[in-house]
Figure: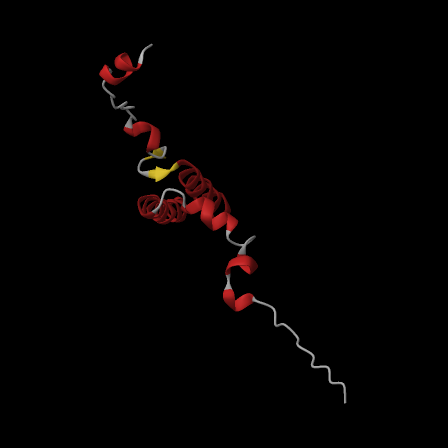
Length: 107
């Protein structure tokens, strides 16, 4: 190719389409899947432990609405909550260990 042909070719901008479903979290009834199944299992466990359908439903509904709120606030909040105890000393300024300083004199 000669330089004249390169100058004549216009630069076109490439546009890649990203579908919304690729960046949207996977949810069940508006709650993140893991949080929904956790609420469902705890509700079933409460039902089995107490033998009360009302207790199981109330526990499920309470955790379900908490899961919906967490998903609407930040879809990755579960990952942050699960990793925060491991990194607490690294990020919490109140957890820093004191540094001992010793002064040496040549007297």
